[in-house]
Length: 452
Image (cartoon, rainbow, N blue to C red; front, side, top):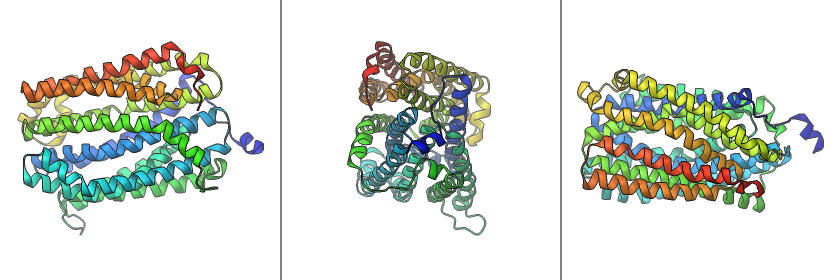
């Protein structure tokens, strides 16, 4: 194994060049799925405002399961990064295979829950029976892509954790092109394909996820990564590594799921305000998704680099690294905020919903774009905590933030019936509550004796 370790050195430096070499490909890889999501909404918007509004409900529901995979991804990524920092290349392949095994079990659970639980939840929460029927039918199709998504996320953990994020772009570009083509074809019945309307977006997403996954595994094999990292060499069940992955990941899975469940709660409250406010809020989620890509890329970079540097026993460089990444993250977020506030009409007009819709959305957009700047700080510190290995600390921060968030939105939207601009101001409460304990934990130095 010593000879294998000499073939490839995965230890990172803390230079700006190293940060950007990891973060920028991740940004591109994150932007592509968001383009897919926005494309879905643009095409669905062509079916009418109800379809655009229901895309928000179904999108957030599916996101609950997607972020469970993201939590597993983050935990696995931190472990792979730590082994990379320790230069234990032989251990990476086994971690990856156990991660895929766990992901497929989670996918089966997600499919079963959606088939049997989602109809009851939607009937309880939505006021319109036809909307419930449309959402249930869509989700029963869309959830079948969950195994593909989860394996896709495990692949992301592998490439980011081993500092090879440049390969992410190839898979996501394939996914984007495939998704746009099949979205247009299946939603509107073009190129000889069936006119599936709202359901067409679900089929298009599944097809594109399969295409992206297939292409990236071909690329991994063609570039010798399979051999270098001992992938697929030993698929035997490894209890020790399975327990390690679950121990590291379960607080992150709970954290992300709690976060998105609260967002679904938020959207249900918005639905009570009418289709217009729900459609406006769906576009705001697009803003967080698309324009937050830079922020989440720097967050993922923080996770992997902090873990890698600790694996090198360079604890003294951790805070310097965090501040350096935070500077880049805030800079990009500030530029996005400036752009959205100068050209709000240009962004909102792409949804084709008319001038009344745009005027209703602009005040909300100004609040959301400002919250992006605070988010750009908070997620870096939160993911630094993940990189240290104390994912339970992340769960504590999330529970505190969500508690305050849900109390606030319930009072503002359901009891006081204030405009949704006030509801979206909850983002400032949420991200401030995430930041404070994360910042305290890193500054305390308690993470220095944490083992993974």
